[in-house]
Length: 312
Ligand SMILES: Nc1nc2c(ncn2[C@@H]2O[C@H](COP(=O)(O)OP(=O)(O)OP(=O)(O)O)[C@@H](O)[C@H]2O)c(=O)[nH]1
Ligand SMILES: [Mg+2]
Image 1 (spheres, rainbow, N blue to C red):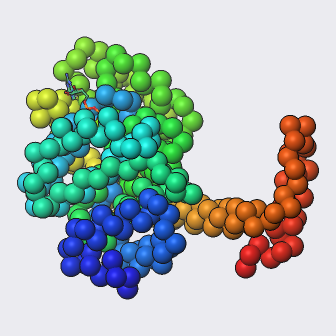
Image 2: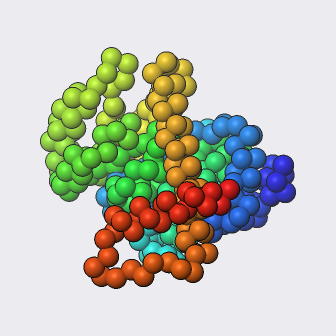
């Protein structure tokens, strides 16, 4: 077992933070560390919250922490901030909204920002989720802003993804973007104290019925975080979806497909790392001019990389 993993098993919070930094920085020991982490198995419930800026994701996370802590569970929160390389503004907001939990040993809050990681933010976040699991948290919540490709990618490793919408914001249009329906397991209409809730709900219901299967219809939950309303139901629906994944055939199939995609992604990352190393070593790189044919250059370099054994 990797030394950091040993220390994490003894509830050394600094080892946890260090391990996450290692994946963020793409440390050379990353893969063996993660393999040890993975060998401990999956125990936690992984929940993803995504949606437009200001939809109330952090407020929901805050309420979910309170709710699950009351049920005796420990919680890790990973706030993903793709916009800032220094974890700036958005994290500040999260700090303020979740600060009541900062002195609680059963709660860990960490933000992830873009660093030099080759696999990018989404890879590092997925790894961080598993590291938190290895430490022993019962619930792991990931908050991402917006619904770009990298957020969609992150949500592929979580068990249950809740897409947070608000009435009259027009953000329902985002759902029609490619990929959203694929990752949404639950719709949350937050700020249900505002006008336009029923209209949004009707629209969502239509959408949900289009993708419904016999076993699974995406639930729609209304919440008002400012009044602590709807959180019990939200948690119930999260647990129901978790049961679906782990207790049914189609849930198992879904989990297998996710894992398959992840293996491909890891292989892609490793090959790319290899190619980059190869190109860096070559000092006779063909001069790239503005008029270069990119296809020919790519073919030529790939052929050379393959011929030289791709480093291994
Ligand atoms: N009226 C109303 N306001 C809410 C509700 N939930 C959150 N808000 C407000 O919406 C604003 C944004 O809340 P956040 O929880 O920070 O939203 P977020 O989605 O995490 O925002 P980003 O992380 O910046 O994308 C805050 O001013 C909240 O007080 C709600 O149920 N009703
Ligand atoms: Mg937030």
